[in-house]
Amino acid sequence: MLYLASDGAGFPLKIQIAALLSGKGIAFTDIGAGSDAPSDYAPYGRKLAEAVAAGGGEARGILFCGTGAGISMAANRVRGARCVCCSEPATARLSRLHNDANILAVGARIVGAELAADIVTAFLETPFFGEERHVRRIAGIEG
Image (cartoon, rainbow, N blue to C red; front, side, top):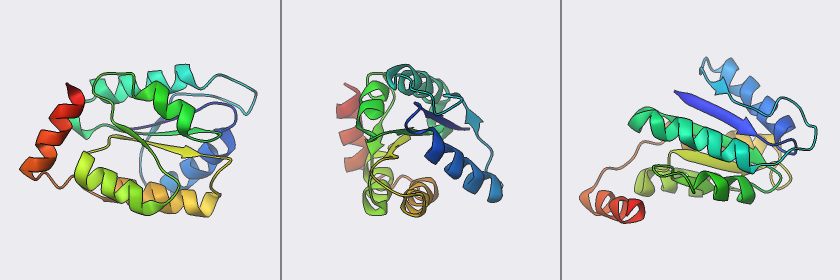
């Protein structure tokens, strides 16, 4: 299962990425915000992270706010969430390969729609490498 969420600042980019995903036949659940009206990022980051954590190893999420930073911090407060804030595809790809990141955060005021599409594609298409050293390191993150 794939989840999307944003605050008001991230809403326009979320809508653009939602159209991209729909065009590729990728199903997702949008859990808010429902407009670009000003809203706090923390509740949306937390709600998405809770859904991803409850969804097991196959669940993923994509978050959008102005910078991607605040909403990623909120998401990472949830046990089982491993959110990475990315402004280019290489970090998105490596965070999946090495860290099994299950949530991506993108800053709508930082990257444009085309770059965001490349970041999202890298995140969704890259599997976790699964090598023992990476599994061990992730266990250290989880505590």
